[in-house]
Image (cartoon, rainbow, N blue to C red; front, side, top):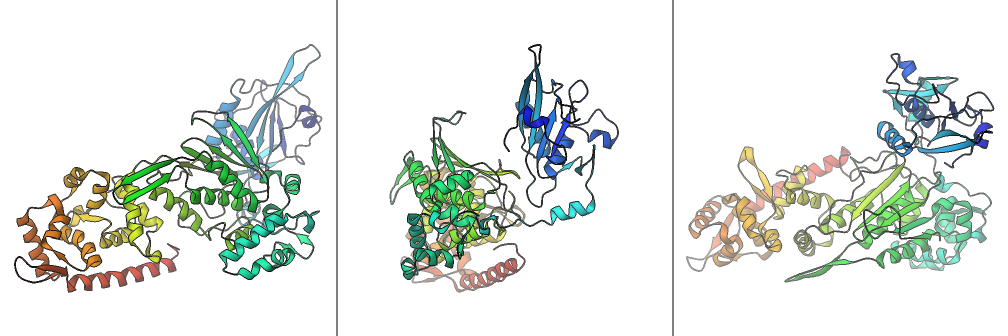
Length: 586
C-alpha cells in the first residue's frame, strides 16, 4: 500500500476511500480502549479501527485530521518518537502488519502540525479479524459486530486463480523465445516426451493453457514474458537478492534485482547465491563428501514455492537475504488456504495460483501437492542442519529461515549411510528423518509410533526399557560415526531383545554370522557369558537358529522372527492404508 500525502488525504472520502479520520481527545486516540467500560466505547480505539479496516480489505486510520470534509489538519502527539513501537504492538495484538508513518503540515506561523497515518493491509481471502473476540465492521461513525451475512460471505470465499486470468494488453509477441524454449526443454525431460521440443512455441503454450488463442494469461507473462513487459505489468514479480556480511547487520551490503521470466530467472538467482556458497567437508573412513551451506535442491524449492504460491495482488517483491551461514526468503501473501505452521508437512494445500503451479509441476520445477515441503525438510535435516524455520510467517507473508550451519556431521553421515543401502523406492522419508532427529535431540518416545516401530524393525533405532518405561535411542553405528561410543554405553540397557534388535539387521542383510562377528557387532556392552545367555534365550524362542557345533557355529535369523516381521508388515500396510483413507497422511 503506497504512502499518502496530506494533500491527498484532505480530499479523500471516509467510506469510498476506506479512510477513518480521527482528531481524538487532545489529538490522540486510545490504543485499546482499556479506559472505557462499555464494549461499544472500547471498540473506538486504534486496535478496533485497524481490525475493521482490515476486514473491509484495507484502508487508512488517520490521527490528527478532522473527519469533516475537507479534513483540516489539527495535529497530534500520538506515539511521538514511538512509531516503530506502535507498529510492533499492533502486529503483536492483532496479527495485522500495518505501515505506520508521520506527515507534517507547515502552519502560517512557521510551526508544523503532525499527522499520524496507520495504513492497514487487506485481510486474506476467507479470513476475518476480531477485536475482543468480535469481528468488527464500520457502520457510519460506529464500529459494530459484523452481521451474519457479511461474516459468512467472507469465510466462504474462494481465492480466484489469478494465474489463469487473461493479461489485458499483452500479445504473443511480448513473450520471450529463449524462455519458451527453456520451458519446452524442461517439459520434454520431465514428461519423457522429446517430441514436445519440436512443437511450435504457440502450440506448446496452448497445450499448457498458458495462452488461449490470441489471449495471454498472467502465468504466461510471469513464466516466459519479456523482461520489459514483466517490469511494466508485474513489477512485484521481481526477486531481490540482498547480501549481508553478518546476521546482526540491518542494511544490506549489496542488492541485486532479478526480473527476467521465471524460466530464466531461477538459474541466474541460484548461480548468484552459489557464488558465495561454502561447504563443510566430511572425511571419515568410507564417508567422503561435502555438505554445502546452502543445498541447491532446497534453495530452488523454497524460491520456486515462493514464486508459485505468493499473492500477486500485493505490490512487494520476493526478497532473499543471504548471510554467510543463513538464508532468509520472504514473499507476499500468507500460506495457501488450509496450510498452517502445524500442518506444513501433512496437508495437501489448495494452490493460490493453480495454473502457474501446474505448469511448474509439469516442467519439473516444483513438486506436486506438498512434496516440495517434504524435500525442503528432508534434505535440510539429513545434512545435520537445524529444521527450516517458518515461525515468522503470518496471514500476510511467508518467511522461511534456512541455517547453513551443520550442527551434527555424524548424523549426516548416519543418514547418508542408511540412504545408500536402501533401494530407490525405499529411501527414508521426511517423517523417518524427523523421528531420528527427535531421538537424537533427546525425545525418548517420538511422536509417530508407527514410524518409530518401523525404524526399530529396520535397525535404524533401538528400543530399550520395560513395558511402562520404554525409550528409544540411535543405534551403535551412529555413535561410532560421532566417535562417542562411551555415550552409547551410558544410555543402553541391554537384554535379549536388544541383542536381537542389533543382530537382526545384520543377519537380514548378510544372511548369517559367526560368533566372532556377533561379538564385534555387540562390542563392549556385554560379557561373553551375558551374550551366550541372551543368544540361548533367542534360540529357544525361535528368533534365531544355528547350524554347526561348538567352535564352528553359524547363526541365522529365526523362523519366528520372520513370521512376526511379516505380521508387522501387513499390519503396517493396513494401518497406513487406513490412515490414508482417514486423510491423516498423504
